[in-house]
Image (cartoon, rainbow, N blue to C red):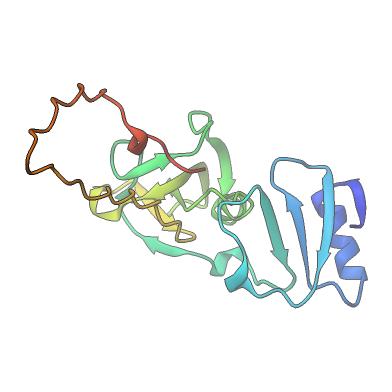
Length: 183
């Protein structure tokens, strides 16, 4: 660890100055915060949806990141799930900055932006279902990373006694464990 409390930019600069450092790991909710140097990072072994972000040196520009879906609006209720705090979208940021904001948040899967605009509001999405998104001449959606939803558990098979009738089951509550989402 470089420092107990260092800004993200200072952590990146320190890594660039160290010949063995090829990446850094920081806590996504703390800036400044702890900064860990990494080397020989195997991206396929990285854990998604973690409270930590890993920044790889020479990872390229964020303009190269994501898949564009022109004229597709993935807002809450229309195929998109908003991240907490989405109601106050970051106003007047460039597309590049919006993508960087999503990349910096491990829970972000996609962004919704104004169609063909150089800057504007940036809406971060925790997930998108492209088939449920709405056609829109004013919005574009960029899928930044694939965050697969947690599959529902398969219920265990039940057996009914052959000699004794099954007791009357208790009423099922309106909510169940499938109403929860693993964060």
